[in-house]
Image (cartoon, rainbow, N blue to C red; front, side, top):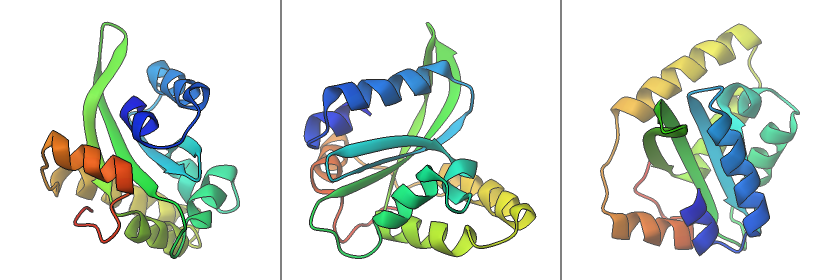
Length: 148
């Protein structure tokens, strides 16, 4: 998340607020979004819950945007010295936003099932990349992305 803040025009205080939330480690799966100088760390249920601030932020990034949008899936496996440790999946933000749009309209039980399925997909069907590719994604938001 700090790397996203280093390559996007986001105030350091905003990134640190989201890092502190992640360090509380109450959940294992998060979505992280940066757009237009802002960032938001959210649980998946909050993103898929209609009309929540998390949901509205994701939906605000639909279509072509004049600024880069970075969308990440974060999975925390464990805590090491009090810090979450896990994996980061680079997401194609347009695909992720369309998924949020479609599935947030469903009843809660169907959303919950979809969230479980999407977590499995994000964890199992991963395209590995180099650190250079990750930095390029963080700088540009991916554009025509090869990511999930």
